[in-house]
Amino acid sequence: MNFGEQLRRLRKDKGLTQDELGEVLGISSSTVSAYETNKVIPNEDIKNKIGDYFEINVNQLLDEDIEESYVNRNKRNLIDMELAKVLGAINALTVVSDALIADIRKSIETIDQLTDDLV
Image (cartoon, rainbow, N blue to C red; front, side):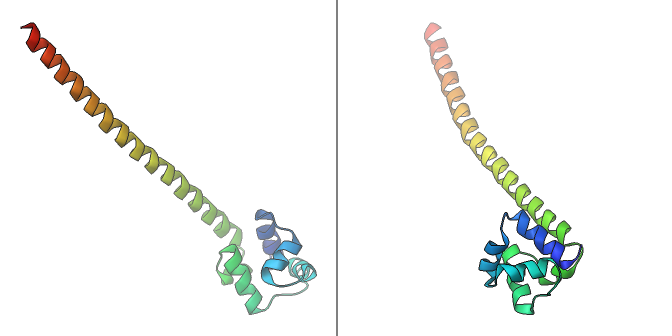
């Protein structure tokens, strides 16, 4: 995948129009179009802005593995979010289980008292 194709893919994955990406980068939509069709290669400043915006290494902009890197970062983000959910659930279960243990202890004490009263 060449630079222009990669840029178009990144832009579309973010749900941006060429106008919107141009606004973010401080360039016109026609310049974005020229990048995406490989008519023009951006200067280092624009490459850095693209890298910063899409959270990728600038060197990856010309690398065919950009899609894999982008997908892997998104997968890591999803994994992190799922781990946060699991840890939250574990924390909630700990609170609930502590409350259940306290209730069980109270019930045992009540049973012991009632048993003592019967004897």
